[in-house]
Length: 117
Length: 116
Image: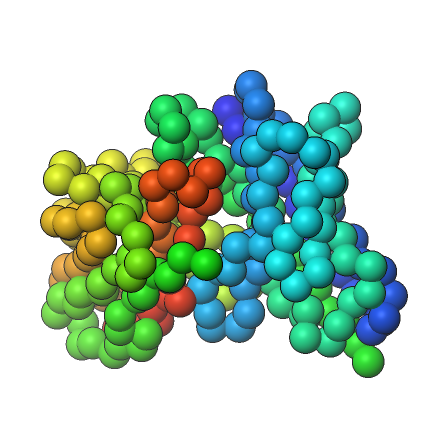
């Protein structure tokens, strides 16, 4: 069964410092991995995804993530954090069982990122 | 990016009544939509997968007669909470699978349901 783990409930970073939000996965076959961000009382916004190709994936708002197959990780990173990056971040894996469209998203438990001035 | 619209954003209803939440893909067709429930500061719990023109697939433990899902067109899915109770109060989020988008699922802004 597919699963995703985000080992940190909360990450605290000072503005301007680099940030990392961790994610590890367990899948059978090739993983389809995603990062989403959720601001308070809002839906989820798509940040980036890894399907195939380069291990370093660049996404929205300066975020990037590195797919590491040997460590089964897909950590989200940003070189310089902003206060406005403070939000809830979700890593997800997509079950590729429904042909080209894929199946449901399986989410990690979420990591709350707090960036202080 | 792709836009998914969810309506209403906030709704208050009385116990025992039913309430409908709409999820629309505004600029793309979605053969599959997903409905989630989220409690504060927690992850999303998948309730059901909605496929256009067919019956929804419910996750284990989700009452299909209580949470009615209809996906009548390629751009609209609805979730109806029937005979609502206070414990149904939650944040409900829909998402849509955009065809030929490289497996990306896009989310609506969510709907807060409060049952009084």
